[in-house]
Amino acid sequence: MVPVSTTYQVFARKYRPRTFEDVLGQDHVVQTLRNAIAQDRLAHAYLFVGPRGTGKTSTARILAKALNCPNGPTAEFDPDDPVCLEIAEGNSLDVLEIDGASNNGVDQVRELRDTVKFAPSSGQFKIYYIDEVHMLTTAAFNALLKTLEEPPPHVKFIFATTEPQKILPTIISRCQRFDLRRIPTDVIAKHLQFISTEEGIELSGAAAFAIAKGAEGGMRDAQSMLDQLVAFCGNKIEESNVLEIFGFNSGEAISELASQILNRDSSGALETIHVHREGGKDLSKLLGDLISHFRGVLVTKVDPNGGSGEMSAEIREAVKSQSENVDTQRLLKVIDLLAETDARMKWAPNKKLHFEIGVIKSIQAMEEASIDDVISLISSAASAAGDIPTAPVSTARAQKPVTETVQPAVMEKTATTPETPVSQSKDVIPSPEASSPEPDPAVPAAASAVAPLSGELLWNAARTALIEEKPLFDTWLSAAQFVSHEGAEFVIGFARAQAFFRDSLSRYEDDIQQCVAKHAGAQINLAINVCDDLQAVEREIENEEEGAPSPEVALSEEHSASQPESVAAAPKPDSEGNFKDDPLIKEALSAFEAKVIKS
Image (tube, rainbow, N blue to C red; front, side):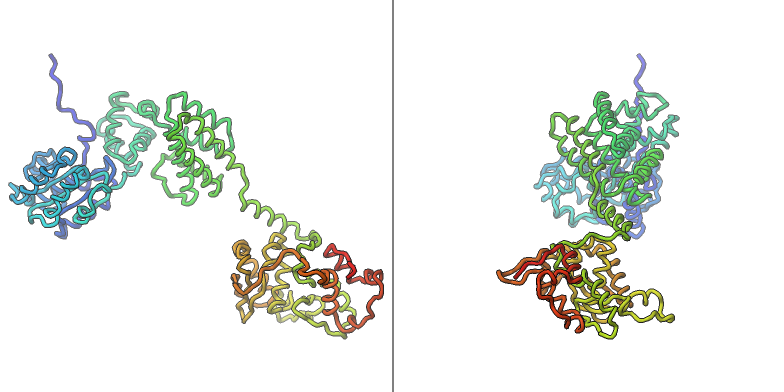
């Protein structure tokens, strides 16, 4: 009979960290413990928190070695010293490892409390290590409180748990807490390559990354998976072996499905889902990997160097290419839709149906035009068609100053009578050709291109120019009202009821400020406020009471009041027909698409 060998050790035990230098991915914990030992600032209780396989027990044993080694406490100890070997194997009388799951009663804690008063047999400290300490009952925790707060000088407590929320806050407050993080994927992959080299195993880089990704940050899980693969494949392991044994999804397959969504390939995406399902893949796991992939694309979009350690070189290039071909808004929408699909799939009997619906919705989201796209398109078209005359203003917009429309005709008449000065009320905007002097060569061209204005006159001129340049602003600017102009400070405002117009207009504050400064001939600091004392600008003209003059009559009266004396003194037409023949009235009626009604 051939004797059974008992010397074999699994990789998780054979390559367990023995010193602080061997601990991977937990530099923040190692550095703190090293400094505490070097400065002789040792706490009486430590709590190690973290997911499975991240090194809680290994770090606790290394700390115990550093405290009880022959020349201790010191961080530079010999792991092959007999005392250190006893601690590593769990045979030391001074380092007691207790399983919190099976010793969770108050009686066991009382027994522990009675033994802490005894001095250590050989080392400097008596160390109690309780694993899965969250399994202790509330009574057991309460029995431990007093001893944990004021233990004898020769006693140290080290606790470890994966669920700190189950530990009493009074226990946590008496410990120094260290949170061990998930080990990065590239760190696990490099360590697996190191183990493979030591063991004479040929492990491909893609296979190492697949194992490390499947381990989800746990080094022990990754080492156990490598052990299993060696038993299945022998000394040569490829990525396909990893995917076959553990049912993982290849990075290339996930990247291909993501590309089909980004490229609006519905049939290809549905076919990929069908192939994975027929191959026995877990669709929930496939969707989770797809969301993680899009998360990588989003991170790369925001920070090209971010998250590079979580993927292989080949996948990194594919993710970079995908990030360049999609905008952030659509990417966020796709991730939201897939996350909603993931929530529905957890309880759905037909997971494939919900997966397919989620993918189709994501493709539709890629095809939808966003509001930013529409605004950009309209603004670009309006700028490109700047030389095309705009359509006449309808009566719905008659609330704007009347002279904004009839101004050319007014200037045409006054230009023929230069000896008669034009009364510049706040409703009349002087034409640069009629009122500006000859340009002074000493004045810059930008300053002399437009006659300097101020106050409400300045705002009317700037608003007119903005609407002509970008008609999209008309709706917002019609509600904006002049507030004040003092020095370089120029303020416009909206009534409280129209505050939403301010939110839309504030995105273009720089453009408005430049236009106002251009007409002012000086630097302007623009402010757009919401004022409680302003009345909302009505978008439609309505007669408030019966018998009120019609808009057309009010227009003619206001127009006559704004004319020079020579023009205003002209005899008024006696008949309705002669009144309509007046060139100014004709132009006003055409601009407002109005007609004359007898009062």
